[in-house]
Length: 352
Image 1 (cartoon, helix red, strand yellow):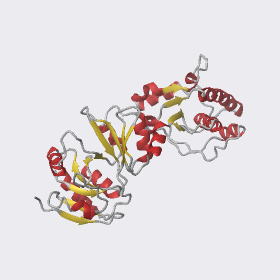
Image 2 (image 1 turned 30 degrees about the horizontal axis):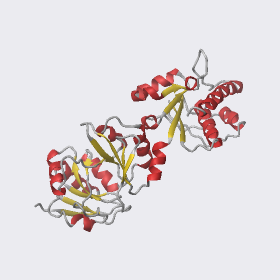
Image 3 (image 1 turned 60 degrees about the horizontal axis):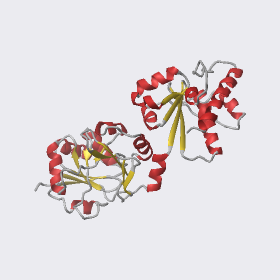
Image 4 (image 1 turned 45 degrees about the horizontal axis):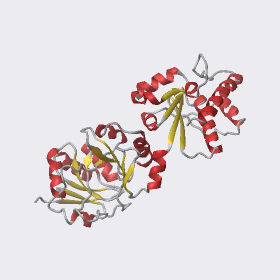
């Protein structure tokens, strides 16, 4: 038995010293009861084997049944998992931070459940600890997962080193659990997020158009494809666009004008720079020039089989598969570029 220290915190405005105290306990190999938005859990640093063994012992859990893991940053998913499928990135992008656990293939050949909680206290403690946390629910086998501190502490006082009392959890329902080690995905537990919402996101195809500045060519392609899909009553495709440069700018006047002639308004568009996160969640990445393809593969080599020149993917026969940047050119040149993109988009509407 140990002396369990209880620390009461304000869930909306926790004191930094209280969270640092919890992190220090975890770094030293201690166990800490922490709140998440779903239920209370017992946390141990994934970097401390003795802490993990102690956690298995007090939970009376078989060693061949791994703990779910909490992370504080979506990028950490790749520290814990391998061969991560595209639907995992889609689900993380949509529901993290939040009550969704993704079961993925682990680095050691087994499987691991990973979640980024939507809870200020949990996220800060993970960050201060500097490591992912094993964090099963703070209940004995056969008992419900605790949503308030009193239920979380009653069976573990004297077994954990520190316990954070933040009152009642804000969601109060366990996370939904999705197994992505199989295909199609398997929803192991329907918790705070419904099956329908999970399946809708996981099954939706994501198309990403890339150009240089995301102010003309990729804007045209995105707007046209969105219109075509709407006309076909297709709701199973997400269409994105981005550029290779820093974003924040609107579409060019000429781009707005050519699209206006199609009945499309892009006056609210703001350019954005492509990120690894966009690439990872995209099923098909369509670029305007070979140079864009090269830069995308430098940023994310794993996307090799998903990146295509737009004219190439649309099967437009041309000795030059690049679509030239119209920036700085006359309006007539914009119209020519638009005509090429329109033909390509009409073709790929029937492909995707």
